[in-house]
Structure formats: C-alpha cells, structure tokens
Image (cartoon, rainbow, N blue to C red; front, side):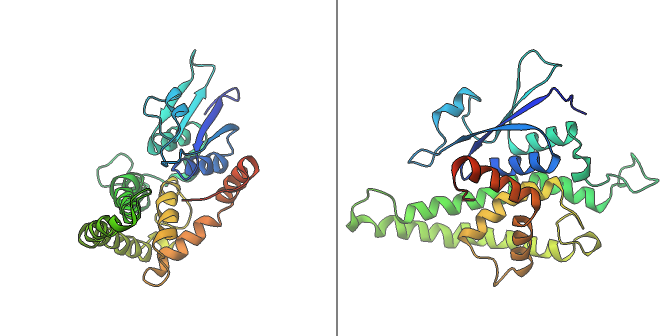
Length: 253
C-alpha cells in the first residue's frame, strides 16, 4: 500500500483517454493533483506534454514517493490503471483470480478474472483502433480549408473506407460486446459481473465516445444501457464535476 506521503499528479487532456484515469483516482479515493491541457486547433495534444513524457500524449501520471529520489512518470492507460490498483487498494476493482481450492493452477481462474484481464487489453487493442479510424474518416469527409468544388472527392474516399473496412469491424465488435453483456457472470450488468472493475473503467472512454458518434440504442440496447450506467457511476460523475470546476465544461469526445 502506498505511503500517505505519496503524491500523484494526473496530466489530463480534454477529449482523451485521460478521463478514465481521473475516474479511477476518484474511485480509489487517492489524493491527487490534476493539471489540465487543451488540444491545439488541429486536435493534437499541446507541445507542453512533451515536457512530461517524450511522446507528448495523455494520460500521464507522475508519482512522488519517499521511496524514490525522482518522480516516476507513467504513461499508457493500462499500465497507469494497473499501477494505481496495485498501490492504492485497487483490489476492490479486480475480481478474485482463482476459484477457491484451485489457487495457482492453470485453468483455475474465475470467469470474472479472465474477462477482467481480457478487457484490460481489448479496450486499446481491439476497440479503439476502429473508433480512431471512424474519427479520421469523419474528418476526411469535410477537411478544413478544402475548396468547395473538391470536397466530394475525399467524401467519396472516406465513405468507401467506412463501408468496406471501418463500419464492418466496428459493428462486428459491437455485436460481440452486446453478446458479452448478455452472458455476464451472475447475470451482472457489467462486463465482468455484478460490480464495476478496472476493466470497465478502461472501456468507459471508447464506449462513451462511440455513443456520441454511433448511437447504440436501436441496435445494441444492452450496450446503450451499459454506457448510461457507466455515466451514472458516482466516481465518473465526480471526475466530470472536477473538470467542470477547473475548466468550466466537460466533453467526452
């Protein structure tokens, strides 16, 4: 468990994955400082973030502890979430790994834990790439500064990419997720069962963001309900309120 003298700073970027780290900090009741950043007109992260981490992306956290002489800088959502859960009582957000009596055995893992570990990787590995492609094709349809008479050309190209590659993969993924919610352990409303896990927090950004561009309600009612449930979690709402207090408004995407 972390020392009471440990200091966590979150470098939060608007409309980014960093919001789920803010939610996690609220969920774990970790004392923290948040520093907010705005995107540039081209929607890229500001150069100031490169002063924190060479890639200049968000989320990033720094951790100052009596055990270290220099702050530890951690990037990538999955690593940040696992690090914070390891040191700040995050076991409440991680399902029990083994079925009683099968500790340490191959195949002795619980379904809840297997789902948890899978979705910790699925969010960035399988879901986000197609949603980023969708964002890119949306931008291609109306690129800023392009003369009016040329606008149909990138729109045609973007529509072809969407129809042949992006949309089929997105909807195949949503079909899978809808089925996973139908079969959640214990009939739970979350992907790993009856309670929120760190994997749900990982999934919160791509699914909430997706719902702003691809309304889920008609075809994916369980997924749409899941998004509403996530947005109504107290930790998520506290994180939103924190940003509204600092920046005056919050936008998921």
